[in-house]
Each structure stands twice: as structure tokens, then as C-alpha cells.
Image (cartoon, rainbow, N blue to C red):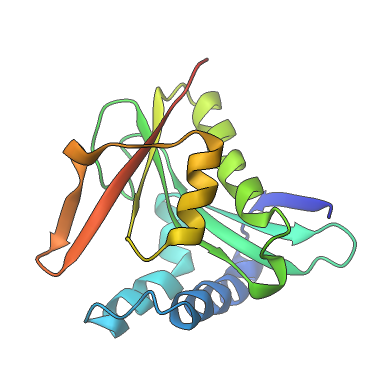
Length: 168
């Protein structure tokens, strides 16, 4: 499938909010309490776009929105992990219609390319144990567990850190 990866524009924000919210709800990724609060963050595309880069994947032929990810440059407000030279991506969501079709991989590769362009030394992401399908993608692309940097934004949420070392 031919995809176009672009930066989301204000006209895209509502559709991206609906997509990301639906994916996280449908995949039971919001079962750790304070669901509504995090769902509101996921759906607040305008704030994410102002403080990071919201990338979207569309089919070239129909323009159907199939996925989104938030790329955070090193030191930007959405870069939670705070390591020097480390870019991050967050909130990767792929619609059911895009699964198994390379959408997630295309979005992750777009983040890696963006990080290289900006001179980052690595890319990091946080993940939950239940995100097994995403883990297979990340491992295949060369991300590695960095257990010494696992973290807990709250006592009931255990996030695993994965990193990808960039070679410029």
C-alpha cells in the first residue's frame, strides 16, 4: 500500500483525535485508572502539535487516515525521558484498517528519519507490557530494551523503555 506521511494540520486534528482515542479504547490501553484524563490528553491534538510534531499516515489513493504518532525532538515538552540527544515518539495509533499493512512501521521510520535530520543520537519510547504487537515491530526495527531506564509515571503504571541508537 502506498502511504503518505505528513505533519498533521489543524484541519486534521479532529480526525486524528477520533482515531487515537478509538484505538486506545478499542485496544484496552486505558484500563489503568484515570482513563478520562489520559484520553483527554490523547485527543488534545492541538496541544501536541504545538509542542511536538504530530505525524499522520494516509493512503495515497483515497487519503484515508490510517495512523498517527507524536514525535518529540530532544528537549521538547513532549520528550518525557529527558536524556541529552534523545528524541522520542509517543501515542502511536494505527486504525484497524491499517494494521498489518505497514502503517505502524512507516510512522516509526518517519520518526527515526526526523531524529536523524535533527542530529539526535537515539530515539526512545515507553511501552506497556500489553502492547505485544507493537513490541514485535520495535524489535524487528532494532529497538532494544533499556531496563535501567524503565519508569513509573504513577505507582500503578509500569512503563518499559526501548531505545534505538542512531548512526548518522
